[in-house]
Image (cartoon, rainbow, N blue to C red):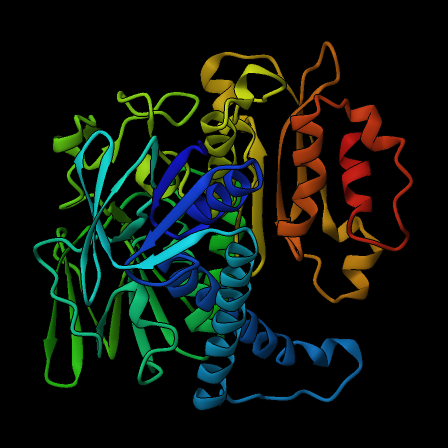
Length: 452
């Protein structure tokens, strides 16, 4: 009898687990209450990156004077942008559904909760069904965190999911939260011409990133006229007439037409029945081991709800690893997921990407490293592109030459980091990068120069 594998949540983790387990012979049921493809993916990630791409195109038109062209000022067509976002989301969702159907995955549109370690209750618009399972994956994702002192209205006080695009483009906006999502919003709205204020609770944007990386982004923000309120923590956001007032704990107050809250997320485990199944959780996140197993060995968790890196790429790989474990492939060739080697990117302008061991982390550990850095201003393609901002930094072991990590700030950083990510994962040496024959002229040449 085929393994009965029930997956709760159809985001990147659930979809990956479903398609791979089905190929391996499992009888897969996928339950999704919102949208196949994942709410965070299709309501947050894809729309935001689509808007960022459009904003980037607008920013580029403001720079073409430096490329021998007449300066142009583009204006956003809100209806066309909204249509473009919906079209991309629709295509991706249809592709995902077609892939699941081709693998024989049963999909149910409804909510689910655990009745016990092997029973899942599914409530749809027309029925209630109880499904028996040999293995269960919880991949229910997350939602924006909203503190008690903020009451978003979807019009002027916005969560991240109210911005793609907003009903009315802001003339000015205050972004609360200087992490990855927050700085992407700063870039996005400033690209569309809004006056942006960023409330930074610490003394640098991106507090968990390399200070040198954060400094480049801060400089670019300041050149654009972004106002940075450092060392300020928002305590209230209120509408006053046709403005939004953000008050901070140090007494500073910001007035703008809109405000957006970007202070993290919370896991979607409310009402899921974790207690009934005996699944242990902490702050709503399911506690997992390296196989993504909970304390109940046949119940797994992946994606944002697992409390690991909240990246679609990580969620997808977790889903694949869960499918392998459910189907017994860990008994043969099976590589454990190493979260320390996951590449990540921030789609600001310039882009920021990193992977592996960070310079500051190594110093904190007292670890000996070799750090090499090359600015894009020394790279011909960057000059051709009229955009020489940023640099490539590679961290390696001084004794062996093995690449341990790296950071890239600049145009197409999210693509270029793949070379360093591969080197980190495959334990390649800096000499392997140096001796690779890259295209000329290309931004990738900076990688070889940084590896020298």
